[in-house]
Image (cartoon, rainbow, N blue to C red):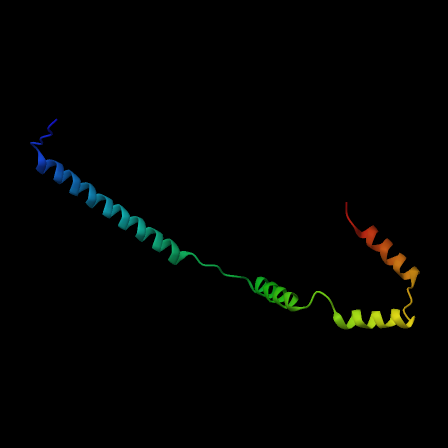
Length: 101
């Protein structure tokens, strides 16, 4: 089978035209995306900045207060740790009543 083309010039012209249109489309698309990036920005309110700063400070605190744990352990060991059941019961009741269902 033999393929012959009588209109090679027309095929080449069509090909170069398609390439030119693609480059133009790519250029416009790139330009539009660059403009979008230039226009996008985030502005935090002063309240949001305060919240971020507070969160950083909270994250820097240890989960366990070693000094308090050591002090309680020492009181338990010495037999000087006393629980006030009435105060605990009142706090538990207040907390359970303040929960919204």
